[in-house]
Image (cartoon, helix red, strand yellow):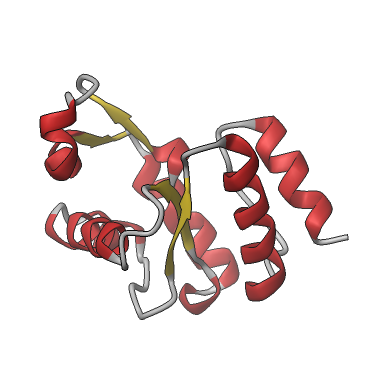
Length: 128
């Protein structure tokens, strides 16, 4: 969903824990995600996002909470079962790309939507 969200502003370090308050869905992104869900089926669509690594699942819990509380998951038709929201480490682009490649292999990703063409191309090579 990286391509689906913007920010009203960049949160300060103090605000980082509550940063989901600042996540603003891009206009019509829920409809676009719903089309992907319709095409592939809800159990075959995964949310992969970059966050703080090594937080024991806290970042995943924050993402799931925001998706539920904002109504985005329902509007987009997302399934939030365990394993359907995956957080990769954003501390470096290389680590993020490596972990995304691992997700592609583990989950068997065949189609990906990403806002960064370079990341998408690198991750796509993992499926070859």
